[in-house]
Length: 123
Image (cartoon, rainbow, N blue to C red; front, side, top):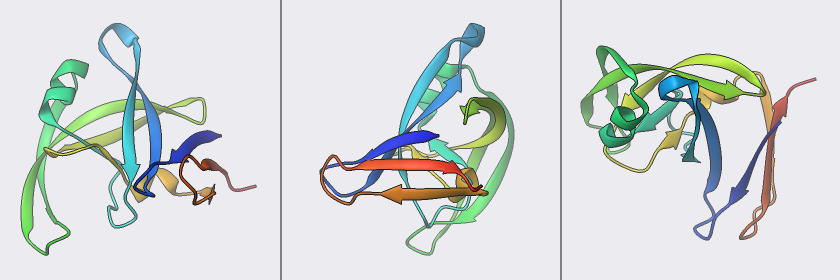
C-alpha cells in the first residue's frame, strides 16, 4: 500500500521511492495529476542528481493545449514493495505522479488538510 496525504492546497501528495546512484533509495514527493497519463515528471536537476539514464525524446499535449517536447529517462521505483521500471519525463516544475502508476490500483482520500490517502492493489 502507498500512503500519501492531502496538502494545504487540497492536492494529493505521494512520495515515490526511487532507486538512485549505488542503489540508494530516494523519495520523490509528487502531486497526483489525473490529467497526466504518464508515470512521473521531474525537473532536470533531480534527474541529474539521481543519475537517471536518458533514452529518448517524446511529445505530449500539456494542460494549456500546447504540444511540448520532453526528454525521457529510465528509472526504477519501488511500488507496493516491488521494483517497477518507469519512464520519467523531464519537466521544469514540481514532480507530478501520473495515472500510469495507478493502473490496477484503487485510491481512497480524506479531502481535508492533512487527510490520509491510500493507494492499494485492487483485490
